[in-house]
Length: 491
Ligand code: SIN
Image (tube, rainbow, N blue to C red; front, top):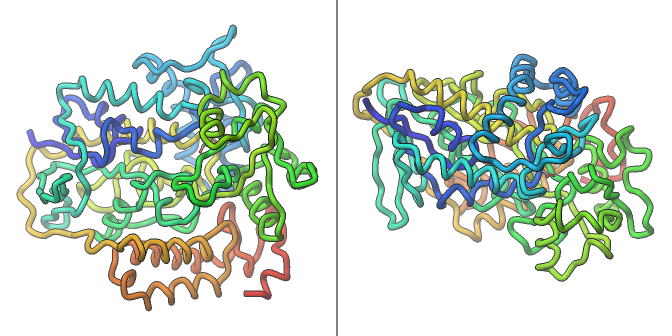
């Protein structure tokens, strides 16, 4: 029986590796133990209707509202119904979810009508989950895990993906025969200047799938997290979890006025796209944005140890001072189009987690639905891959990722991406970025430049605002505040 090959060791890849048993799995990852994945950086936890009086319908309603009703209905219903069992499965595996006297301790985040998020180790949820999954995968006899390998290409025969080409830390390229391939390579934040994503979230999996001819979906929907710590030099920018606002922290301007007052019925807990746009505009107008978590002084060490550590390392004391914040690219709702089992449009190729798009997140992901989706979709894709053919023939052809941009090329690309594909877009800015990339010797032939082009074209092709895709020059959806005329005409 030939291996199925999984690329990526974040939550989706690890869950898929476990679910594929007893099928032999080869797991390839860039870093070690899954800790370099975006999953490991996640501070928010897992959204699930497990609280008293909550139900999956209410979770679904919040998911649709946050997603501007662009969500795939069946995918949402299936995700929210699977959520309580996903939490139980992780807990049974050993994830130490936080508890209080009544059961799971539930937190609240933006867009949720009630407290619905389970955390592990307070705001260290992602790392706690990755550690438990990685331990289980390392102990699983059906999985062979090769660490420090980088995806470079796919082998193809008669239109079917039958191999993965990867490079080890020493630069040695190898082809691995695969009865099926799962891309669980994460998002694209590393293509932006300000991002909460780790360096490995560079879009290589997405770029390769598109180069191989897999269909893409919703590429223009990018989520900006409103409260990254405003430390411009940091890559990634440290996240100040939305759970802080769920617990009572408030966004303020320089004078202490609440920035979200009058903006949305949920105030500081409005869906993320709305809060991010509000802060983006305030900063553009020359203001500063602050997160006031001083009311949580007594709770920071126990419930928000990651945030407390981030602040301490920078000499900030959130118990006494407001924290400077700014939006940063955080999550890609779009990606490789997949069905409910993670099948792409290319035979033999699956995708799960942030690289994939089933339409579940619509135009703006609801907070803490990402780790949830990574668990549910990863397990489904792993289970579906069990049915891959026992043997496939050797590749007759290959699709290569191709030449990568240098680090100075990437610095220019990030500047153009930040300017054109931020929380607000317009046709002139999108076209300018496309022209600049096409004219740039270092970027035009690079896979990052080609991927950026696909994202910019997708944003150009949707002239109306929807969720996280806000077109200053387009027709605004009813919930989106109007774009200031001064900016629309200044471009
Ligand atoms: C956060 O903790 O604010 C981020 C959670 C998420 O991305 O859903």
